[in-house]
Image (cartoon, rainbow, N blue to C red; front, side, top):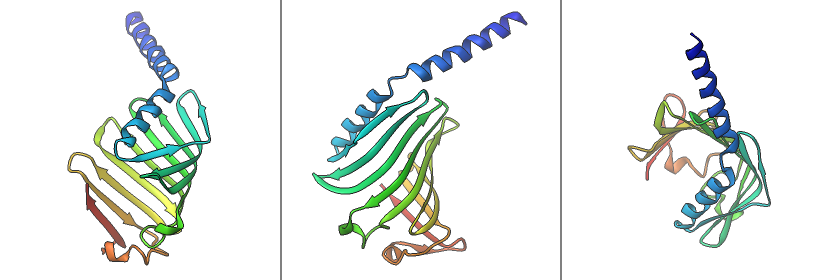
Length: 171
């Protein structure tokens, strides 16, 4: 019994050490490098590193050198078996307001090790509420707009279902 107890404590201490000592900023810079290959750049005003998370403040998103969106706060957190990306205050540039909703108050993208090829999406914004799943294996995204309001610009791309409006695409 002592051996099991010591092994369990050692695993918990190792797990906590990995989480606390993980090079979070280096992972973020690696993400920036991979986005740069697709001509997407992130420019943040401030980076805060926590024990389990990395916080970014006043992030401007550029596509081909043109600013397309700003994010007030972005929080990347991981527990190794569960990771999440939380966005607060996503504002899309005025030039894109005919194609996408202009403001998203809060969005949460989450990933678990138990379902490694799917990412769950949950968002609230000027469009109402949205939930969905991104399937990385099938390369498809399925988003359900639950409380649809101010989505006139999206309606040509949406399908009507029992739950409300649905958006599906492959990438």
